[in-house]
Image 1 (tube, rainbow, N blue to C red):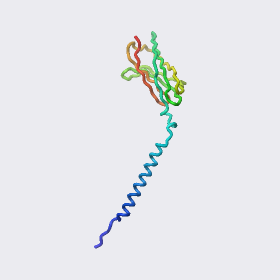
Image 2: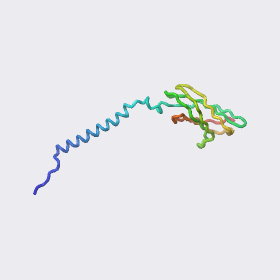
Image 3: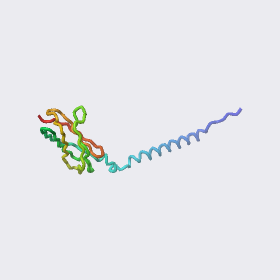
Image 4: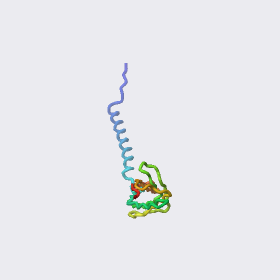
Length: 144
């Protein structure tokens, strides 16, 4: 009776080394693509805004909220919309802006006008959104 022998230990070791080397090369190619990527080309990482302050003017039939927005990123941002939210997250006022470009380091006023009078003494949240989707929130209380 003849018995068949398996793959010799030397050939098995060579195959395992070849598989490990190929996996290492593929892993190195995949990781090096992330490491050598230029972060300056990713504009969403460089776009940052901050709400510095809010000024509220309550009239007889309307409320005007002036929001002071600072660009703390390294690229110019375009403010596209602003919202006044109740503390539970419901939208009270929505405003769309055009041409509100803020250069790096610059502070600009963004005005949100409501046709309804916001309740004095209540807390609200103002939310500013850029064209690329960067958001900034700031809570304030309507003065009594």
